[in-house]
Length: 250
Ligand code: FPP
Image (cartoon, rainbow, N blue to C red; front, side, top):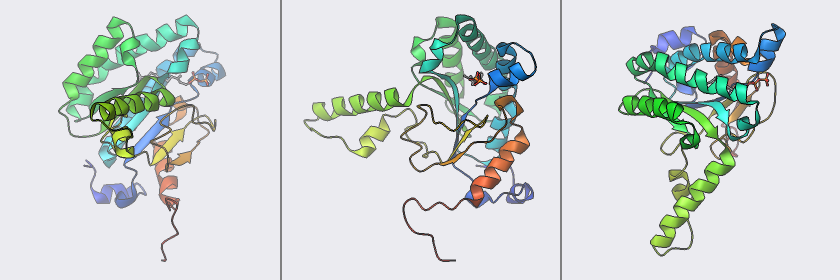
C-alpha cells in the first residue's frame, strides 16, 4: 500500500498502476566515488549507506512491495580485510541507528543470504532487526548479505528435493523450488538497477530476474539521488513488457 495518493504519484511523473512491485538494486561505485574525491574507500561506503534512507522511503511511499539491496556478496570476502571490516561496522551502525525509523515506517526487514556465517555482533544486530519488524506489513526490505544466486538456487533445489524424497516423489515443481528461495512469497523482480554504468548481474537474483527490466544508470551509488531513482522508475514505465508474448493492440 502506497503512502502517497495517486495524485501525488502522478505529480512525480509516474503512473501508480505501472509501478514495479519488486525493485532490486546493485549499489555499485562506492569505491570510484571515493577515489574521485581522493577519499578512502570507506568514505564511499559510508556515503553509500547515506543513500539508503531516501531510496527506502520513496519505495515505501510509492507502494513498491519489495526492495532488494545487494549489500555484501559471497565474493566480497575477497576484498582486503580492513574493507570487509568497514562494511561489517557499517552494517552494525546502520541497523542500530535506523531500526526505529524503519519500524515506524512499517518496513519489514529480511536478510537474504547465508548471514549465519557472519561474526556474532553482526548476526545479533540483524536478527534483532528482522525480529522487531517481522509483523510489519509495508515495504519488504530484503538486504542481501553473503548472498550468491547460484548458491541460493542450489540450496532451494536441495531443500525441495529433500521434501520430495520424504514424500516418496522423484521430481520437484517450479513452485516447490520457488517456495525455498529466500524471496518466497514475494513478487518476481520487475526492475533491476545497477549503478555506475557497469552492465553485469553478478550472481544476483538470477531466478527472480527472469523477466525483469534492467537499467544501468551512470551515477555512482552515492550520487544516485531520489530524483535519479524517480527517473529510473519513469524510464521503466516507458518500457513495453511482453513476457514473451505479443504487444497488446492499442
Ligand atoms: C559496491 O561498490 C558496493 C558494495 C560492495 C557494498 C555496498 C554496501 C553498502 C552501500 C553499505 C552497506 C549496506 C547496508 C545495508 C548498511 P564498490 O566498492 O564495488 O565500488 P567500486 O566498483 O567503485 O570499487
